[in-house]
Length: 232
Length: 290
Image (cartoon, rainbow over all chains, first blue to last red; front, side):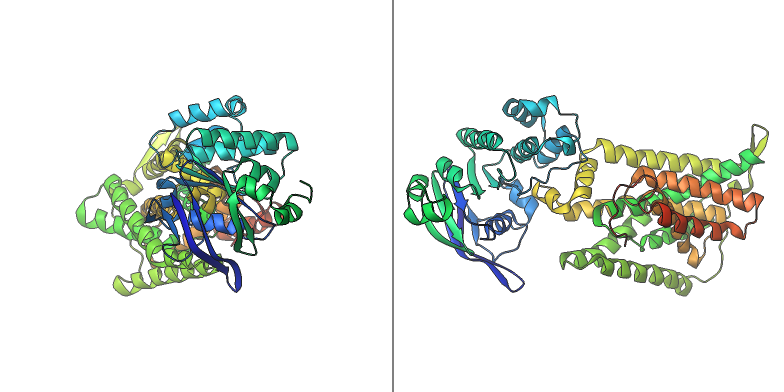
């Protein structure tokens, strides 16, 4: 459903992405793994319309995806940015309401969010900046789901979180996917990202160097040595 | 005497507040000070003058007329000047300089198209006193105070209770994050300029009624800028509190010390605040104020 074709992007003179092509199919989880600086976040920002790429590089259901960020959300593609970027001065509930900006009412979405993340319900009147890191990440994901997207893009959701909470986040990702949302996941935690992925690609210095199913890549010798700490 | 001065001071302060809230709103979103704000004040003051002189001596409808014109002018300035600069990713200092240019153009257009003289509003209200607690208070001061309070409460309601207000509060934290939540940031910025411009247009009529309309009256927005800094740039309650403090103190100094000390005092207050509490009374951040 989401087709990325020969997407390139340069920051002034530094080429960040070169001819990146892949496809996210309906209902799947696709992981993009790669080292720091490989261009993963840049790729997410290009799809989300935050960074401008060439026209027609991103297509949704055969049509070019809108190129301004708010239109991308209206078309059902939402980004949960790296570093969470929740609104710290607003309450948890207000954060969710902003997430529902493109849909008429936030009522249903809030119910869904509070069922999925009971902790957020307890803290809904609290300022979001006072939440713990894990709770903030859950809020960021919940806020992204408020627009009722077809595709959710998660940029480094496990960054800076304790291992137990990382497990929670990954099971939530799978749960979201079971509810019918396609997931594009960008992660440095390659092992976990490949475990949950239907398919995956490896980004190195702005180019996709390998694509395959999650288990194929997880058993690939070069990936094991480069990204999975060398042991099988 | 004291009650009278206090009411006058609050009325002056409330006019500053109308302008200061506009400064702060725009600052909270874009982190720059919109010096073109004075153009909306000017158009408001002259529109009010001509309305009352040529149409009907009714300060309420005159104020509404100025409010609309102030808003339209602010919207035009945003679309023609700031939006193209923002689209190019220009640094905020360029927006600031563009705003200064617009404010000077506005001043000179008035001189060229109308004249450089003072135009006193010919309204029956300006000299009408009422007696409250034994003090003789100008009706116009009470009207200004009341109308400004209503306008500021409406803005407060808009910011705190509506969907657009929520978007503005979110965007004040980060524009890019707001945009990936589905908020049309360009439109939001335009809306904020329209709100600020309405308040500026309204303040223009009130300044005109109190002090007459004249080409360089846009300089009075400096007082609003001081108010916003004293209260904490970017904070709306701060802007109102700073404006009321400045208005009352200025009036008291004019009344009990010397009116020549008025401006000296205002700018001294700005410098003192910047030295001891640069983030203002209610501001939070210590980022560079441009």
